[in-house]
Amino acid sequence: MKIATFNINGIKARAQALRDWLDEASPDVAVLQEIKSVDEAFPSDLFEDIGYNVATHGQKSFNGVAILSKYPLEDVRRGLPGDDGDEQARWIEATVVGEETPVRICGLYLPNGNPAPGPKYDYKLAWMERLKARAAALLADEAPALMAGDYNVIPQDEDAARPDAWRKDALALPQSREAFRRILNLGFTEAVATRMPGPGHFTFWDYQANAYDRNDGIRIDHVLLTPQAADLMTDCGIDAGVRGREKPSDHVPVWVELAA
Image 1: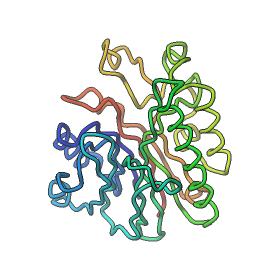
Image 2: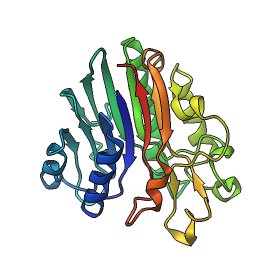
Image 3: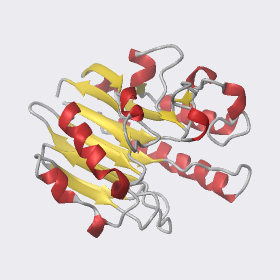
């Protein structure tokens, strides 16, 4: 089972680009972030026509997440538990039953948090604490599960081409990195860091100052796997070349393959 995460930065602008990548990469499951669309306006037909089941958790003009799956989506849940008053569409999860093993797939768009300090950063850290609670529950199930998406966290200096440029940014502040490590240290395997160690593996390049051409990138899109899912992992990768195409997202897909 090939599972990918992709922050598409607006489905209206990039529906065809997404369809082209799906045709080419053919993931069994794709979790999407920043669809920036209400559920009713999401172009589900475009993806159902090529064999995907579609579940969305949308929001007008901002945020929004979705799961596309060639397998049926079971027990779909929307919204990260822990705050009934949170109206931002940043979390969706479902069980995908592959050819051999069911996998619980969670798609997330973690808050950016800038400017920091401030209320947006407080929201980010509170959201990450809720994420930690959900992560602990996934581990307690002792079943294959993963959390994939745009975490808006640069885990280490090696995950940025110019780490000094991010010192005061919410993506790289010590509290952000510590919150990420607390989740990881519950017992998750971080796919890219495990299978592709070392610097230079970026997933985001800003639109400004020819960042992609200069490879001035950062790695903020991550896939975290429970031990049961990590045992099934056979490969992972980053489709960095997608960033160089016409009208690209500023993110690129990250994928894992599971023997499931």
